[in-house]
Image (cartoon, rainbow, N blue to C red; front, top):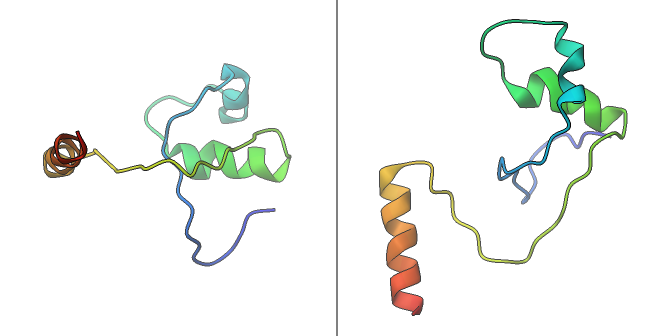
Amino acid sequence: MIKKGPNDLTWSGISVINPAIFNSLNGRKGSFEIWDSVLKEQIKNKTVTGEFSQESWIDTGTIDRLELANNIVTDEN
């Protein structure tokens, strides 16, 4: 079941994926949004799993966020 509404969890985007989950795209070409196009259906079918982690995590998807992460690591060491 897909939870509706806000929560305090995130998807890091780090995945080990069997290419077979893309079969539902039926040879579609071009870009697509993996969450809406593939993962929601796989979650509903209970064919994917997730893992909870209590480790520190920071989004490094931008130069500014990467710099922040580097500063945090430097300060901690």
